[in-house]
Length: 361
Image 1 (cartoon, rainbow, N blue to C red):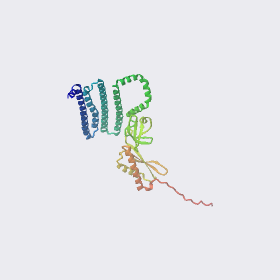
Image 2: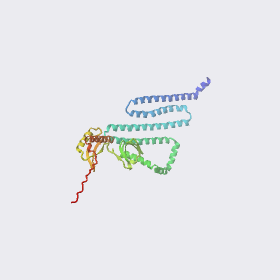
Image 3: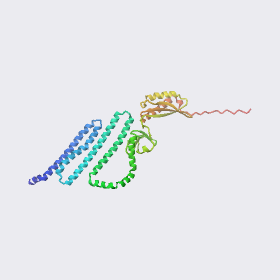
Image 4: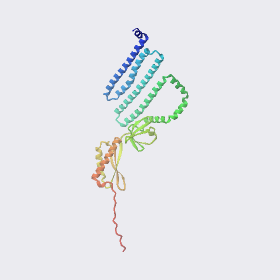
């Protein structure tokens, strides 16, 4: 009993009490953190807006780090007597605080651009303007994210005295190193600058319909160094971003998504054109893919064996126009087969009977 009493007296008793209290506080911190985050996650799960989800993400890591920082700062002086260990612990807490600030800035960056995108979608009727704004937001969001990470990592490294000294000594040779790195990273930097130029000038935007070397597809992603094109057959074409500044390509939705498509029909010379015009107008007028702007049937060309008819129709976007063209081909083929089956393209052969040569007088 005397030994136990002595153990509980003095510095050892204080150390034991502080350690137990510290462990209990850490346990309470973890339990409290998990309880609060669980309640918040359930609450925001019933909300349709993603802003609530972003707020929970912002609070998740900073809240845990704050509770742990308070617990460690409160009991570190009582538990650890070695000043060197306390200094290392405080250094680690400073790095944790810097990372927490970086985490908050990243999440605030996500919230800001999410709010801007939703505001543009709600207030802007023109789809072209919406896609243009979202393209800018997407590229600048990634740029700010990379800048935040770079700054936070730099600040963390600068908290180490030895690394800071090495960094200062390396500045004396920064001229030569800068030239070498400049030549080595010239292409990468050029691609990043091309990404910034595309964000400003916008030769392409998200969801633009483009044709590259005969392959058509939509712009699915625009990164700082490359662009992902979703082709019509679900393949993904990965293109370097400077391609869209240096090479030739087609952009069918440069200023607007509406488009005019052409359907070509080849029929006999004898077919009544006015009747076909009337039927095309009636059929297209009932199709939901038509935007009520352009619908015109004309004789496009006269060939040796047939005439070439061209039907021009407009739609809000390329996908609807493609469906409309397909429907017109099927309907006109059906209509001609039923009403003018003899007026499809034909090849005529005239056989001249040979007359006997007249006899000489």
